[in-house]
Structures are given as structure tokens and as C-alpha cells.
Image: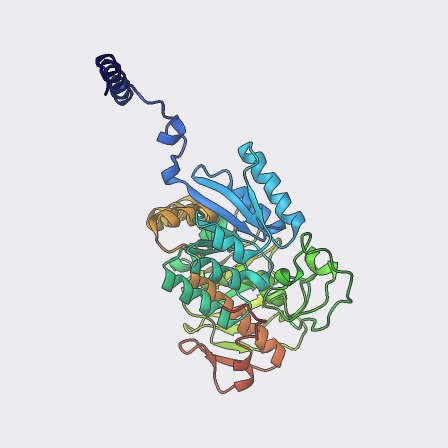
Length: 438
């Protein structure tokens, strides 16, 4: 039996708690300004949660463009090399003044575990680009992938199809498509002020060769798996003994890892040239062999009849140069130019207007990373979208195959095959070591 005093106490306790609860509902809540997006902060609902795969020297530059963006929160990095993932963690933690950046050594575990990540920066070696991009997109991530973004024509096809099937935003790292000097040259070529463009010239790397090394470096003692997961580092490449030169950039020039001197810079410059001649959706259809080790001077021809000539040097100063020539004049630009070179100074008079009109018409910023981030939010195609990557890299791969087989070739871009050349068609793909596949 409950006494009257106990009943009163219970009622008092109930009324007191009810009053406290009511006060809590009516009292103002303290919400940090950063959560509401005040004082220039971006609220969490608008932030893009980012991670990274294989962030080495090139990826560190990309990270330098990404971290200052207010709507980016970089939370984790995955790399087969412990030193690389720890270096990235140090950069990210310093940026956010905490120790929150997580590190992973296995990509499959990383993609499976981090369902909170919206988008990835992929800056591995060339051999991993397409494979990592397709795996990431299948895991629901948008992708910024460094170039050369495919090792074969088949890999490029897989990236295009995966992005389409899974509805992912993809940007390849041909950043000069988002730089004012290069945009001006491209727009000037397209405007007709040079007349109908008959020739484009594209820079290829002035080191290495088109014919690459198929030998292996001598075996060295393999580090512990925690220091380097060698199997993960190799990925789909054929198994070969560990040598420290590979993991410090010495993989370049080796067939299993690289796209030759043509791909090294052609991954940039072919897309740039193709943009200026209105052929971003169509690769070259003729490839004329040159009898030298590098491909210097090779003439390629696009479906619209415009020629693109490959050059190692002599046309410009600086890297990743391009040039457009028409009957009324020419324009050329490369890295390090204050303004493009032109056949007549009068052509530069509308520099600001031409670039400004491009920005207004396309709603593209003069920042490749910002274009990617904007497209994540709007779900529109990036400036260097999967098809742009695939068609320009198809031209890279076909030029390489032309050099390897030492003969002229014709390419059917609609069927994505070489015409009457079974040997060349076999080189459109490479065997991939299990369990890796695109």
C-alpha cells in the first residue's frame, strides 16, 4: 500500500521533471556557427567527405588544391606504402589541427569500410588508375583520377561504362583544360579567328621512348607487409620481384607500368589539342609511323581531317605545350607562359573576353579541382569527363601501338578497333593478374 506522503512525493517529482523538460524545449539551444554555415563555414550537410588512394608526389600537389576548399573534409588515405600514407596523414592533420586522418594499407578493405566517404582522389602509379577508379565507382564513390587514366583502350572503355552504370562523377587530371592560357588558345582555335584549323601540335615527354623495357629489375629483399604490401602495389601487373627503384618512381619506362613518353605528356596534350579541333568525342583515325625511338614527328589524322603532330621539343618552351595553326594565324602555349604566343599581337586583345565568355557559357571555373567539386554537387559532367579521358587516351594507346608494330594504322572509332589489323587489335587490352579485373 502506498502512503499519501509517497503519492505527494511522486507527484512533486513528476511535476518537477515535467517542468524541466518543458524548459529544455523552450530554452534556446547553442548550435555552433560552423554547423549552421555562418561566418563563411560550410555546414556538414554541404561538405564533401573525401579520401585518397596512392597519394605520392603528384597526389600531394592535388591535395594542395583540395584541402583549402571550404566544402571539403578529407578523412582517410589508403596506400600500399606506409611512408606514403603517414606523410599524407601528417599533411591532413596539420591542416585540420587534429589527428583524425585515418590510414589504410588495403584498398578493398578501405572501400568496404569507409561508406561515409563521398569521393576519392586517386593518384597512384599509372598501372592502378583505371582499376582503382572502377573499383571506387562501384563502391559508390565519385572519382578524381590522375593521368594517364588508362593503360589500354579496354581499360578506358571500362571507366566510361562504370561511370555511366553507377551514375558517378569522374574527372581526369588534365588540369590545363581548366587554366586560362590553355582555355584561351583552345577557344581561339574554335572561334575561327585563325581560319579553319588544319594542324594541331601536341607535346610528348622529352625523355624515355615509345618502345618500353620488358625486363625486370634484379630482386631485392622484400620489406615487411606493414612497410610495403608488394602484392597490393603491383595490382593487376604480372608478378615480378621487388626492387626499391620501382616504388620510388623507377617504374616509368617499363611496359607493365607505363604508357611511354607518348602517354606521359600526351595524356594531357592530346585532350588539349582535341578540344581545340572539336574532336573530344572522337580519337584520331590515322597513325603514320615514324622511324625513330620516340614517336617525335608522328602525324595523326582525326575524322574531321585535322592533323595532330607529336613533338618532343622545338615548338615551345615549357612542358605540355600545344599549338593550333590555321590559314589566318596560329597560337601556342605551354606551362610557364605569361600569355600564349600568337602570330599577331592583335589576337591577344580579347584574351579576357574570350576566357570570360567561356566561363559564362560553360559555368566552368578556372580551377580543375573546383570544377570536380562543383560537379559532385550538381551531378553534371566534368570538363575532363570519362569520355574525354577515354577518347584522348585511345589516341595515346593507338599511337603507341603504331610505334610498337612499326607500321601505319587506321582506326575505326565507332567500333573502337583497328581496321584489318588483328595484331594491333590484340594490343587493345592486357591480361590482368587475378584477382584484379576491370
